[in-house]
Length: 522
Ligand SMILES: [Zn+2]
Image (cartoon, protein in one colour):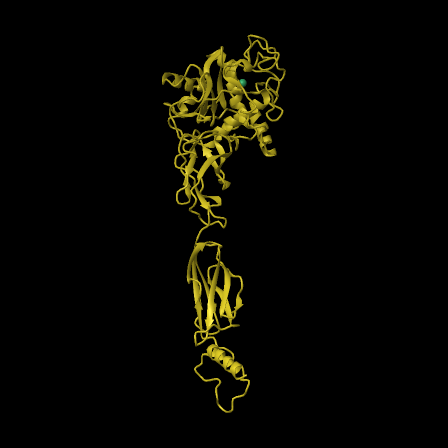
């Protein structure tokens, strides 16, 4: 008994480490002393105070609670509390074991940087663990800089930058990956370095260009094992202004576009804006849908090549040519060496005319290789031609300018031959069916969804066109549309208001002067 008592006394004295004799030989001591509760005196770490790791790591931290005699205190409650970083302590309170030890799992924040966790027991000086984390391994791609400032024939002004992200969205620097860019929507092609390696977690595309068509585009960025991400939509604009016909994408006969301005007229930059380019795409799509053919358009890197032409005469001087404004423009282009023998020219003339909103040659009776729209024409007893507007999108159903240019371009191919069965002698170059693209007559021209190309298929396009007649399908200026090339399967219908406007324009805006008058006065 005595032995066991002294042993118990010994162990208690260790636990309490008080220096006070808690048991002994004092005469009043009871045989069974009152157990004294050990008093925690200090908390110390038993795992490193400073850690490094990766975001969202789970680490174990541990402390030992000791008494004044530096002996572990069992059953002491240790509070584990995150005091910096959005991590969590899995067990906020842990009771020490028989050695005075307590440990807790600490889930570090998903945000890289500093994390701190405090382990405390009552009012004792707490222990603070610090964990510094790095981002995790690259898991996804993110577009840090969106592509933009796209222009046919130029490197993007805003080049895309792709950042690697870990699974929590933090910028990740490793591992280095190869990122490839491609066109996600809008068609065309990319040139330049389309596959790059990431450096310090960032992949930069420094020389990419986009070829036509103009219009909305999105790009896709892909890396092995990291999936893909698309850019925000942006718009590919026409090429920068050019006063010369740029290198042709295709050889052979083709239709070249020109934006022409009188010497004294305001320059509205139609050559570098989207409207003209969309207009061409719209009437091309309409023609393809109606006939399976499209015009062989002079393109530069996939988009219509539009030349800027400053004329040498004033608007008034040119308008003084009366019904021969087109001829005046063509003559200027000829004498300045700007007409290639195998090209037809589609000119958007930003000037006036007192006769019409356009003009065209009609070989062999009206010799020439040029059709022109007079964008600010002021034909007598008609609306100003400037009241008509281009389509707003390449996929929009044609409006007045689209039908008018197509009509006049077909004239430059000699359509409609005088010998065609439905040619109207009193309206040279036309048929008398109001739904026909090549109509002229007293009844209103029916422009809209009912409009078609050669109603009876026997005058200038179709199965029954007699040999010797001007025939759209046989022209070197058209090509069959391959299914793969016809990117627009359907044109977006016009609004009801636009349909009414088109019907109005079809009646009030003459697409060219009376060819009978031109023939008599030439
Ligand atoms: Zn006509």
